[in-house]
Length: 294
Image (cartoon, rainbow, N blue to C red; front, side, top):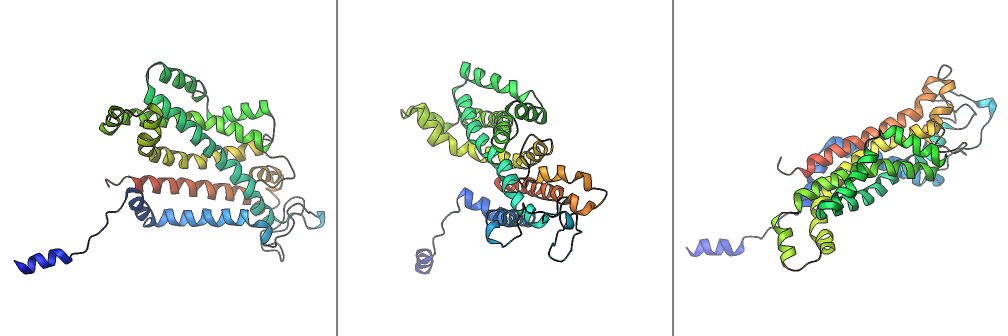
């Protein structure tokens, strides 16, 4: 009996894993998600530190060396229709493409989460007012709504960000409202009300942490859609203006060279596809990691 008591006394105490540490551990075991995360990180770092990579000037061209093939000495990815280095323009173009693709989702995440949290918690006429207004925008297809808003505001990076933010706010708001509605009548919320906490404190302290996960996963998946829409706006002339390097705009200017040098002309499209599919797969991996029941 004494030996048993001694073994119990010296047994080490293990700290229980938190929810988010468990999620990150499960996500780190997903090889596909990790490969996508590393690829996205490499593209993001290359775009941020492009001035320090000693690349060629992305704006300097020469008609003598236009449409050089991939593997040309001095031009690993060839040159575009104006003789500008494709490798340099793809890396510098990642700056605008990632900015226009990610920032609207971040802004829509903040606005949509706030509106959905208020509508889901308050209910009643306030819920009806917010959600019926959101439904007006949600009724339009995303592509047509983005084109319409950009057409009214005009071409430009800021206007593209605004138009895409307006497109994604209704989608995130509906998800946030749905999740919040399922949480507002749980025991811990009732206990907070009984303790005398006001509505703002309940939403900020008690509810936000419980609804943020599903909304964040959904917003991560929207980044791939945002990248494609942003490239589409630039392709149509409603986004970035020449001569700025941006993948959608580069795809538009190189479409006339598709029969002359198809591999070089396809490079911006390959970048758009790679980044979009990586964000999509990373979102799927994060969703699976957060489902701790499995």
